[in-house]
Image 1 (cartoon, rainbow, N blue to C red):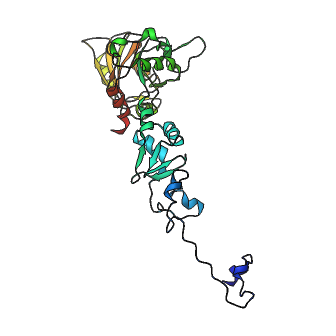
Image 2 (cartoon, helix red, strand yellow):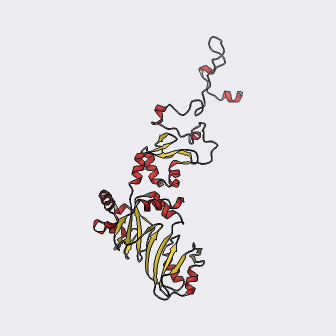
Image 3 (spheres, rainbow, N blue to C red):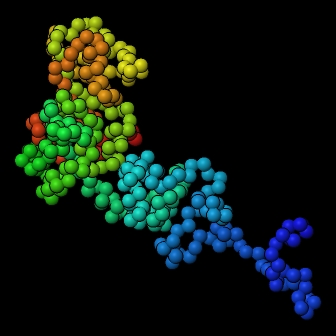
Length: 325
């Protein structure tokens, strides 16, 4: 329109006629980026990758305009169970992730969660598989979270003299050294309160930690001893609908260990703060001993109190897959 053309700045090629009176030379239309031009020459793809799903934000057309499942690659990898978000971001930064045949290094890179092929290369896979997970038989009095003044952290159990070598004959000595050197940096997976004892898992593996902590499909088993007799009314209450802090808990499975015993086995699929102790107090019972003996498929077995061992590959894989079954 005339109004739009008058608002444009004048240019030598767009005037009504040139100095010779000839009609103005018409400019060839620029091919639409991302369509006729493609996405760059193969030689440049490794150096700079245009994210086609981000392209529309820069004024380009995009192959992904009609797709509703566009997400960050790091988020897709984490949800898929390959690694944690933080680990995925490190892999991308190091150029160890390939999307649809193109190696990427941009943290915000997005693609289709359903149709894009996302691969972690061999070097990245080796880095992820080198992460170790440890089981500790935590003694009472040790804290699984950050210790306050005068408290002792559970990770301090992870030292050479406490290694349960009977269960680690096939573990490379370099891995054992690495665990003891990096013990302080291990992440606790499923805390155990100071007064309780038993199985505590610590890991370098972000995906495993997310899998165990993130879902309610992880069964944990505890052996709990009371200070007084447990009546049948208590058993009905434990195995019925139980509320704590105004919210209904997921169903618990509770059974006696022996006739008339004060010792019970609790199976839980959630772990609210001091849940078992508080539920017992709610029904008039006081816990005098609480030991966690199993998380998922990992059992404490004959691991002595205060000792530690590296989890087997089978145990590690079973924990990593918990959230994605």
